[in-house]
Length: 298
Image 1 (cartoon, rainbow, N blue to C red):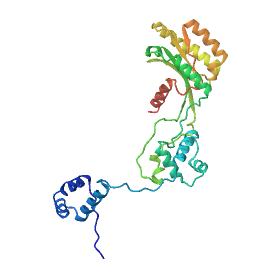
Image 2 (image 1 turned 120 degrees about the horizontal axis):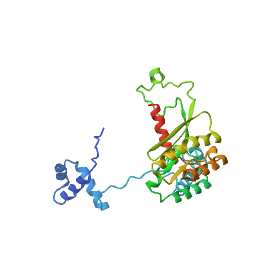
Image 3 (image 1 turned 90 degrees about the vertical axis):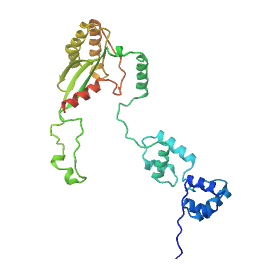
Image 4 (image 1 turned 180 degrees about the vertical axis):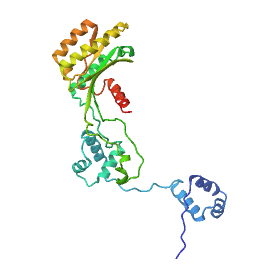
């Protein structure tokens, strides 16, 4: 069996040394000086003379299975039909490529599947109303926002701990279902308590516990017995130009509620914010509810 010669891969610094030394000494002497096989040195210098460049030619890669036109179509389709599965995208592509190739082409353009966000679905009409609302309030200062009474209802589930419990265990079903590794769920876990609350700046308003679902008559009674008392306390502390905010839940927009609020606003010196429909969690009281639920289960 003939001896096997291992090809020495030259680094750029070695190539530079060979080029400099080749002007004064032989290939064999260069090999001894740099501890590089003479055959490698000779091959490199012949290549240098032939190509006029010390760098290797790029290795040929496999031709792409898709054309630039197809790649553009793929990106355009994915961004238009965002919910389309890979299998369906591959089917309408009508060329013999794998789902992996499609995934790779989209990844090259920074596109991949993400979990869809669960938010209020805004129609074009809602978008225009929210844009109008944002434009009307774009110059509000921190002091302006500090005069808004934010209000809302929230349901607190009896057994709904918002925190995630993590346990140490091996990856097997025996340990997965051990009682010490299971967070128990009670049968009455679906029971919930509805509450109404409000706040202004760093001042917390009253919290009202509500039995069952809230009706317009019950909502007006809550505002009359709690909101007005809170606003009167604020004005007694020389806080004026108060703005009351509520969302567009049916009890809030009922004629009975609208008429009562308009009269109460005139008598107690506050205004009512025109809140656009389908709020995408813009009300900062949502953060207060999240904190309250966390503290209850801590």
